Length: 198
Image 1 (cartoon, rainbow, N blue to C red):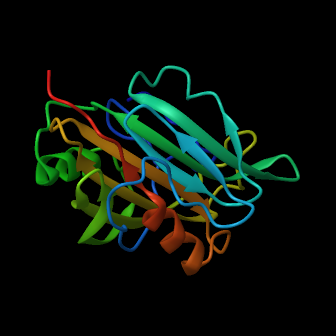
Image 2: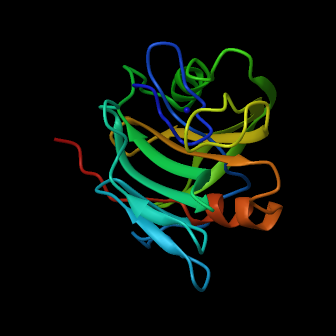
């Protein structure tokens, strides 16, 4: 993954927040908006865009999380089973490695990290490096969320934009909610926008 992100499956962090779950590599440069599969929507922000699966709904950013600029959630029978968010400037982190370290610091206590790997996302001048962080955790059983103990899957994609400002795309979901193809499509849809240095 800031301020207690209640992503139905909160991957909260010490003193801040953030969710998580995404995968694979990004495409080339040129475009400024995520290439979404048919039926998908797009979180389109000033500095990047990313697609979210069919069934998700864009909602206001999480209250209390000053870093979050966009969010989409998926509910089933009134229960929040998945959430995606975009965070900017969540620390004084001016490199991809530092952005990833800052993201890892947000993973809630008790989560089980699985792996961190290098990926690429589309940038204005071609592919840009990023880090993908995956882990699992369990629901705490809060109101409107899955029952306590339900296994959840989290993934973060962290990096910096053209002005070396950190960004974090996160998705949390109940196990089995998103397919591997969904996860890959989400990551491949990330597009960093042209940002000119002042």
